[in-house]
Length: 153
Image (cartoon, rainbow, N blue to C red; front, top):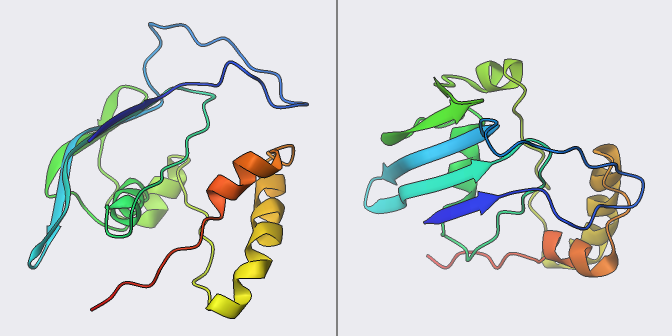
């Protein structure tokens, strides 16, 4: 799995983009990260590069490893293999506090019942406003709030 994120060429209203030199190190790099749990390979050789000033949406099927990757980045889980780099330097976040002290945290929407799905767009908008992304249009916002199907055991 490989993804590379860079700032959009279409700036959001009210947000002034800053130029990022190509030779500037990535803000965050995930290099060949793997993570397994008993009987499950959650991540296998994942690579991700994020440049400063970029906005990234991580989307995929249930069970694709999105939450596992975010928990590794946030210091909740440790990778079985691979490396995280912050501003070009290898880092290990042994706790969420260590990640937070480096400027990394996650904002999660709580688990929902089917009857609560109508409330998700409003809550997503409130959280986007909190991080100054309140000008996101309806089409983009819908990508952030696609409901997850419960996993079948």
